[in-house]
Amino acid sequence: MSALAGTGLIASHHTISGSPVNEPARHAFADRVAAAQAAGFTGIGLTVLDHDHLRESGASDRELRTIIDDHGIGVPEVEFLNGWWAEGERLAADRAAEDRIYAFAEAFGSRHLNVGASVPAGQEPPLDLLVERFAGICDRAAAHGLLVGLEYMPFFALSTVGRAWEVVRGAGRPNGGLVVDAWHHLRGPDGPEALRNVPGEKIVAIQLGDAPAESELPLLQESISARLWPGEGVLDVVGLLRVLDELGVSAPVGVEVVSTRVQELPVDKAAAEAARSAGAVLKEMSASRSAG
Image 1 (tube, helix red, strand yellow):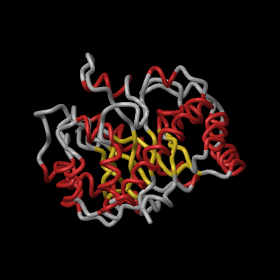
Image 2 (cartoon, helix red, strand yellow):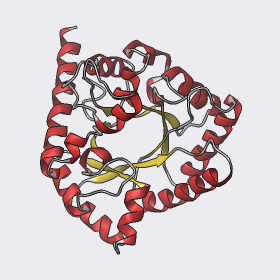
Image 3 (cartoon, rainbow, N blue to C red):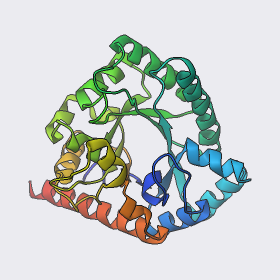
Image 4 (tube, rainbow, N blue to C red):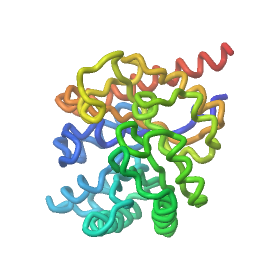
């Protein structure tokens, strides 16, 4: 039986928010939760920016938790820290956001925190600094019962699974690992086989998406506006899932499709299509595993 067969399915924040990156969600929280539950998701993702907006709009964590509980799903995924490598005001702002995340992650019983490192290519800080800072996040997160997943992105300095794994391995924290985003992994230089250098238990979460054969957009712009549903493009999403399965990964699978096209959809249609497309590639992976 596939190790991924029993994992939860997460509707990542950007898939059902109805808004561009770095903007509060267009769809109401209750509508997102209801749509995710109706589509068959076991949980949703929530960003610190969106939670800040919800609290500023008058919602309490108790009210938000009631909505979640009434629908029988969770908020396993919270995000996003991307200034932990910096100095000065940016680092201070990231630490403040981190503390806010811990507060609502505890209120919602979240499982893992996603972090990235938006360091421009060629400006990567020393490895020992990245290791020390990531270890610090892991230690603080552990006090709140959270795993921490480092997400690598092809347009930033931590562009490959190998570079990100150096940080995680160097930190050596039991609750630290990697987020494998299919879009980021496969749009970069790595193929599915590159994942075999990482122990399966160090994969914290998986995110699914796809891409066309060609795009006129710069890679960063494509990432935040033109992703495709898993199975809709040409990326070897099934091959990536197969390798993760062979590694014994049991992390939850999310759908993260950041797309202006998806943002324009009603939230119930976005959630339904996300669940359908994820189910299709997972089924194809399982079928190929059985055939092999």
